[in-house]
Image 1 (cartoon, rainbow, N blue to C red):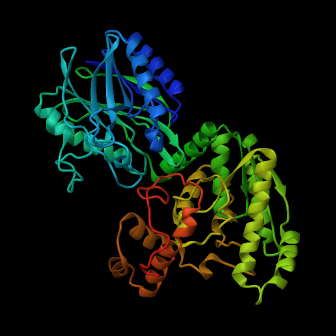
Image 2: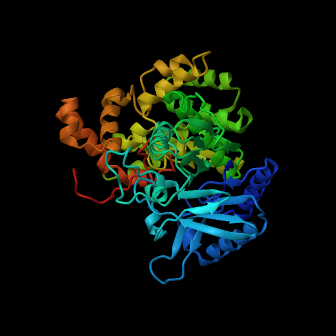
Image 3: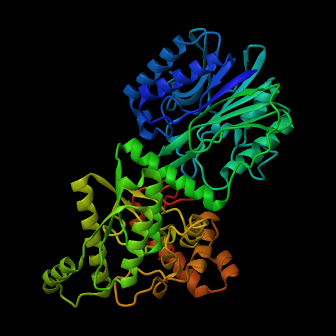
Length: 545
């Protein structure tokens, strides 16, 4: 069988836009004389549609578009993802389905069987699982069609499985001769390699070829990397889609030969590509062109500025230097060097007069002396006011510059450095940012070495250093990775770190600062456990307070 894979970038809820992409891909498939053209999970509606699914008007519009797509089909099959409905009056009646059309009609619908309800997935809220799975006879083959999660429960790959049933195993038992999986699988570093390893074992064990089509694009904080894959019945990779861009390619289940490629690049290259793509996509889909960044002379703001330039072009990035009396001369000269290296526009506006006046006006109202933290936060919040003024006046989007280490322990100021539309590096630990900065500078110095080498500081008080309040970032990040991503608890972490005081302090800081993270801008997800929708903890709670 000859299959065309259409790795598209849908926009959530824009049914006409998504339908047009499907029609164009289907036409390309016809021109290539294929048997079947396939598109990703929920390609018609975008993934994840969230509460749009609960709107009856939206569901009716989706059904109308499904029928319109069916009518354009001839002998070439068209398979795409959409929402479908039952009318049995039990449960939500809504399914996340694969829809197969040909000869002018919807010929087959296979709802998703395994409905994920972990990390960033909340499909249980919206979708009913399939009551049964079926193969579909088409052009001499028996198609075993599954939707995303349905293929992520193979007993031969997973030591511990999430579900009791295995839809793909059932398809095999029912006589499937070709596996097809339509997917919307969010990316995190290591995910593409994991997909290949899992699919290789599945195809090798079941001795069947597989076409796995994944969407590409960024939906707010979720990055979909593409990288669609085709494997032969020996589990060999024979086709690989592009990453971070749309693609169209062909798969012949009988003739294609193994290709030798690395499906995933280094940590630094992958994460940097994801973040650049995330910013580019966010701005395009929100219909904004220009970004403004508060440039402090530190690594975080330098990295966000570089990423923005790569994503949007230097002509669309503006930075604002906002020194106070505590800003070092080096912070200004280092920032100026970065500005020159990147060729971007800038403004230098001192916050000190406004800080002084604010403190002067507020101090008489306080019953006690102005606290050190209060004074520091006033400075950070005035910087936020400045940035939002540039945003409002010149139609910029503000990019926040906090990293994951700071956000984890609350080393950030609400309505200050947390102000903005998108948290670009909020899923990247500080220690990893140094690695990425050195990767950027591998051929020539772009991020000034002075910025990379200087001790981190918020410069909100005399001679302030981050490590006055926090453990060294290498140690802090080791603890955070174990706690946030490996789900280890105090005893297990302390048995490794062997510093009871530090471990207790860090874990407590993480737990008590949930209220800040709840108010943070969406963070581009590049790890397996990012702050935001994928990690939901109560603000008011009594655990380790």
